[in-house]
Image (cartoon, rainbow, N blue to C red; front, side, top):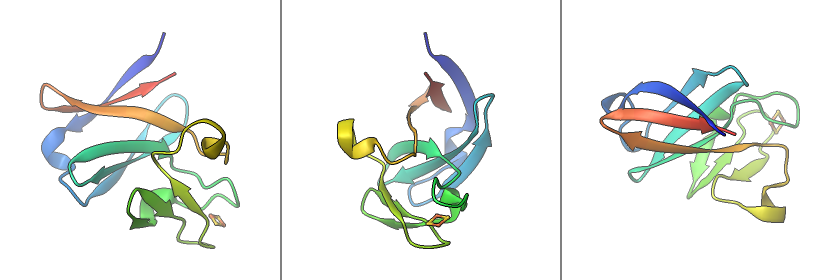
Length: 100
Ligand code: FES
């Protein structure tokens, strides 16, 4: 069963923007890329850099500290890079993140 986290009103995260939200599990970085919400660990697995401040290349976030890149859409073996991807969605005007 997943835990539903309300991260605030949808208008607080328009396309092209990002934010970070505290959850019981960890800080989660949220990105609105072309109208689609993506969520992942905010802490880079290399040395703890802030992924919410990273550069975006398509659906990849590039850590601002040393340039490691993480595809937010990666699944399976491609997602075994130390960054947890979370399901995020807009529901009834709210941003929702689901923790496993
Ligand atoms: S801390 Fe992210 S690449 Fe080094």
